[in-house]
Structure formats: structure tokens, C-alpha cells
Picture (cartoon, rainbow, N blue to C red):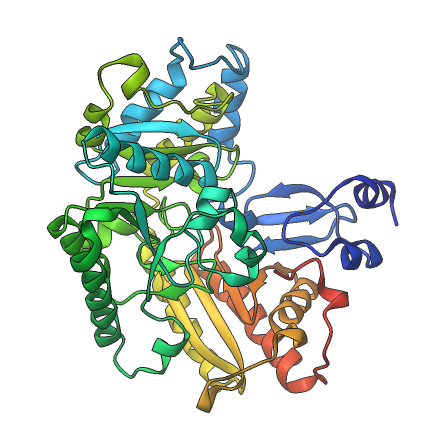
Length: 461
């Protein structure tokens, strides 16, 4: 054990990690990175197949973002936005408004996805109080939803494993069924399943719209639920029924934003303009923590007036941090100059074709893909949808095996998640998927699967 690993285990508590198992096992130390590869302290290289937890867009050490941060350091690293304006935050806001769905006119900066969603929840709640509809306090959420780990975002979440222990702290919500949740996967017609779920949402709205403030949804893909994809038309219908019953629509694009689904935002696939849209992760190209909550003029204008009665009393010390916003500006510059979105179609198609070869693997069930967001679900018996027991940690074992072949990925339960940087070439995507294919085959067909996950704490959620 080297000194860095030793000190890490002595002092640091890692996210989503059982630390008893972490400390007991050897762990990898990443020292540097280059392009789409991570490099450990022994000089070994690994493809970053999960984009450093879905944040990296253009690869590591991209010269455009590096230079933008260096130049901003020569001016100022941080100033408060309480009573002051800074240049990069203003410039980034203008450029973001040019690419977000039409109808979104203002933004509120924060630090990460959880805070962006928390802001939207609080604004939506206060909006109705200011509009003279104090009964509108409830939120509709979806089964399997994940919107972050603060108390407010956990309240609108739906993943029991993550959230059950905190139930006494949470506010009540109204949960609606989500398309492609486990029981819906048995349906032969995904679009019919999606419309059935829309019908359930409309029933909830018809009966309780006078008490419902908003509905929150991850558009197209419920990422942390295992890359569960929604059928075409589902998001558009949600927008229609929420407008019909005068309920705000909050769209969480933290995972799906900035090209992940093949377009700049998931909303763009169905030309949906929500009341709120939240982004983070890829906003700085995966360099620095920054988030934004977008809203319509209707929302913004409701807060104008008396200081004590109408002000939104919320803020963060690093709101609109100039270094982060400089990185965000460089991120958008790369999208424009390198024509990132235009180059995605061929990469998405290369992934789709390569994924067809996974059908020969005995323990691969669903394969879900929206753009370069991919989930490969492992099952004990795909024919009758029998899952592997959680305790077998099959997904984690596949991800650990992939490391031996030079690829960093992480599972969600028995779903192997693949979300490479958009900068990956089609050939690199095919190579990474070949590694995943080999790793699945080795773990599920060639080795003796056993219970227990003590040797996979580094890759297990």
C-alpha cells in the first residue's frame, strides 16, 4: 500500500461506499489523465468509460478548457454574486440562453445537480404561494426517480435502497408509475406502457391538481435507476397534461444534458419547453462544480416586488464562481468549434451496432440506449426476466473485470452502465464495448459466480 492509499483510508469517507470493505481491499490511485484515459500511479492506462461519473464531455486536459481556466486565474478566482456582477457568469448565462429550450429565459447558478433541483423545488413551491394558491404544495414524482441526495431532492426521489433510512426527514409526495419500471418491462409494447403511465399521471392531476405544485421528471432516461429509457412521445405528453391542469413541469437534465442523448438536451428530442430545467455535470465539460436552474419569465416575474414578501431567500457561497463559468464558456466553445453534436450520430450508431453482438451472451437481458447513455442489464435467466440476487454483485464483478482489461466503468446493481466521453471516437467506443462484452462473458459464463461483494467495493453502488 502506497502513502496516498494509506492516507486516503485513514481520513476519507467515499460516496456510496461501504467503507469497511473499501479499507480492507487494495484500491487504485489515479494520478493523472489524458484525453479519454485515466492513468494510475503505476502508469497503467484505463478508458474512462463512465466519464468520471457522467461529467466529462470532451476528454481530460482539453487545451481549450485548460487555457480558459488559466486565463481566468490571472484575473480573479472568486467573487460573491451577492451584490456584485462578474464577467464570466454573465457571459455564460447569455450563451446558455442561446442553446436551452425556448421559453426558458432566466437562470439561477449553484454548485451541483442536487442544489439545482433543490432550488427548483423551493422556487416552484414559493411561486404558487406568491400567485395566491397556497394549497398547491405537493409534488408528483416518478417511481425509480433519482434527483440528488439533499433532503429535498431525496423527497422527490424513488430509489428505496438510497432513501428509505431518511424517510422520517422527507416531505410527502405523490408517486406516479414510470414507463420501463420493472413490471412494465414485461410489457411487449413500450409505447403502450408509456401511454398507460401518462394515463395514471392524468388521473392524479385530475383529482388533485388544486393541491399539486409541480411534477419533476428525468427526461428520456432515468439514469440512476439503471438507464431506464422512456418511450418516444412520453415527455411531450407529460408537458401537455401538466399544462392542461396548471401544474409546473420540472425537468432534471443533470445526467441527460450537454449532448448525452445525441442532442444538446433531452428536451430537444421532443421540442419540450418546461417551466424549470436543471443542469450540472457536463456544464463545465466535467472540470469544475457548477449547476444552473433555468426558469421562464412567468416564474421570475412572480418574485418581483416587496423585498420581504417576494424575495427568493436562497444562495450559495460559490454561486456563479468565475473559474467554473470560464470553464463553462470554454465547454460551449468546444461544442461549437468542434461540431460535437454533429459528430454524435455516427458514434451512437457504432454503439448500437456493437451492442447487437451482446444478444449472444447468456446472461444479458435488456440493453437500453439513448445516445451515448447505455445500460446493459445482467440477468440470471433473461428468458423469464429472473434477476441475479443483489448479494452476488454481478454488475460490480463485471466492472472489476473490465478494469483488468483497461476500462473504468461502474454498475447500478446488475446493470452495467456505459457512458463514455463524447470525445470518444467510434473506434474507441467499439473497443470499450468489446471489453464490456468480454468481461460479461468471463464473469457470467466462464467463472464460478459466488455470493459476496467484499472484493468489489471500489466499483459497487
